[in-house]
Structure formats: C-alpha cells, structure tokens
Image (cartoon, rainbow, N blue to C red; front, side, top):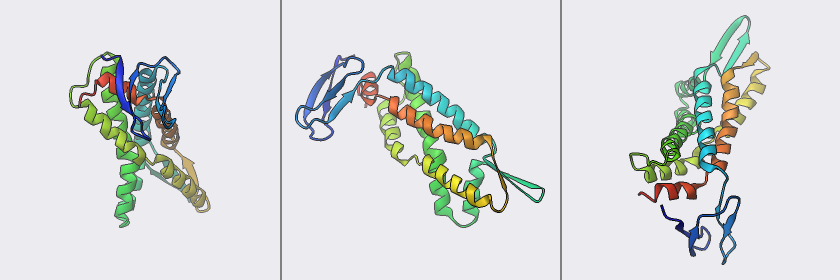
Length: 203
C-alpha cells in the first residue's frame, strides 16, 4: 500500500502528492486554501458501526407500525411502505415513486453498499466485485437521500390529522427519526480518501 496518494484540489485542480496524514490534521491547498483532506479518527471503525446501527434501524422502521389513527373505536395502522402504496393508488404515482426512492430504496442501498465495502476493509481485504465502482455509486446517491424532508412532511401531517383523530406514533417513526441522525453521523465520520487508499484505486 502506498504511503502517498495523488489528489487534485477540488477547487483549483492543482495536483498534490499527499502522505498519510497524522491524526487530527488537515491538508489545505497552497494556492486557493481549500481543504484537500482531513484525517478523521478511527474513520473506518466508526463508519462501520454507524452503518450497522443504521441497517438495524432501517429494518425496524420498515417492519413495525409507523403511525396509528384512532377514531370512533376504530384503529388503523400504517407502515412506511403502505404510505407509498396509498399514494400510488390515489394516482399520485410520480410522488409515490419519489418517496419510495428517496426514503426507502436509496438509503438502504447506501447502507448496504457501505457495509459491503467496509466489512472486508476492516479485515484488510478488498470486496470481491468492483469496489471502486460501488463506492462511486453510493457516494453519488448520498445527495438523493431525503429522509429528513419526508420526516418533516410526516410531522406536518400528524398535526393536521390530530384535529380529526387521535394519532399514535409507532416504534417505526422513532427508528426512522434516529436513522436520519445515524446516516448523518456515518457520512460525517467517513474519510473517503482513506477508503480510496485502502481500495488502492481499484477501478
């Protein structure tokens, strides 16, 4: 494994040969001052832990009731996927697809992709199938995860529905809310330069 990596400044494209940075240090471009690389403590271990926690929360969020409505002795429970199905059945198919992609599919693909990459790297092995391609793909999905926007919409809906029926939050909604912060923590703890160095730019 190389002790230095070639990197282009993200702002001005000036090339650098960066050595392995000491813990807590930051490398900046000498021309424009942009941050080239920031060494994050225990990046792989922390990101892997957050990823596993995120997958557990995702399973809970999609397996248990999201909300329950009580009115006149009747109780109706909904799950995350039933909301998508109802949107589709109400002829709001574009919105249903958008909610499914940004709140269910993209987050789970991102989590599964990170687990696929980080578990082998943890034991100093390379993932068996095109790890560089997988890493590029899941990095490109990150801006499309809009779970926090979906959560804000749910909270607004809860306020409006409370005037018509009693709204009972389920365990899934709490798991979903925590998952938003877990995904943010995983993204914050990940050092992509370290991952590329471990993958040895195997493209």
